Image (tube, rainbow, N blue to C red; front, top):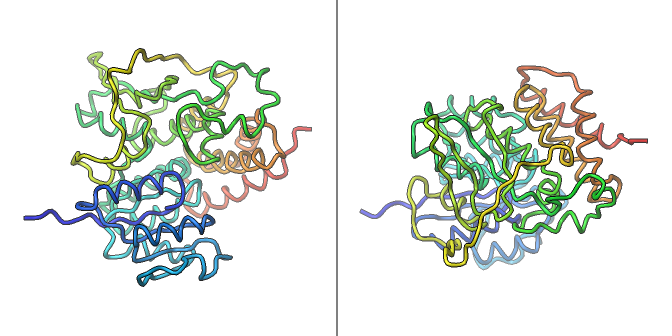
Length: 386
């Protein structure tokens, strides 16, 4: 009997994860079918994707986008709009798996709607778990949904945990490239430009996540994500800098065994694993060339130069409202840096200031988290180090 195809919706199809997801679906078309996509501002690319990949449903999240956003497709396409359009797409009866590739806090409500509908959610949006990890994981259990990580580090841990019993796990170790400023000291980063921060040595990503990699805030957010996704306390999550980006994470077991997942830095592999889990099939991702591999290097992160790491550990330990505040403050600070109104080294400083100033709650509601998200962004806009 032929295996039915898994039907996919991609939120954020025009971003780096979204475009890689569409490539995976096209290469695995015998097993995967694209049902719908959402996009915000890159409407030219969206029109190309509609023509090439032929989704049945398109959601436009930019209220200014007109009908011309979808171009002139050669077959009928349903066009929906806004948050209601996202909700309709992720709960659609023809959708089995939702890929959340939207950057930032904007992915939270779509993720929750998909979980409440009992879908499989392939989550590339770490901010969802950073903001509302306990709430999200509680919903997953209540609604019997499935949450599969797409981030390369969390995908690696997810794969490695299949190799042993969870109760035997001693530590999770996240790897990171170190970004474009690995080896630099704080004095070297006083006059960092946007162009320098966006010059990542290994990965090709969107602007926001590339800046997060430069500040190591991406590692801070990944610590928090791992805390809730895998139910592992912060003190048992480690970080190691690995500039080659070949080893994507380690899992250490209590007998001393350490397992690692290795592959080239190509996001199509963890995306395909999430879409086809637990199957492994040939796909479009690059293979590791063992004949060209000469050495792998590892070093501890520099917490003095990159204080974001400590913010991640603190937030993972405290939980409650800290994740929503840190995430929103960082998003707003990165936006100001990209806009030229905030210095690079001020990004973790303003995040610290806003985190310290907020009214902490240990068990916030979704409404409280969303309100604090708005508050933190406003605080960053007002912040001036003087």
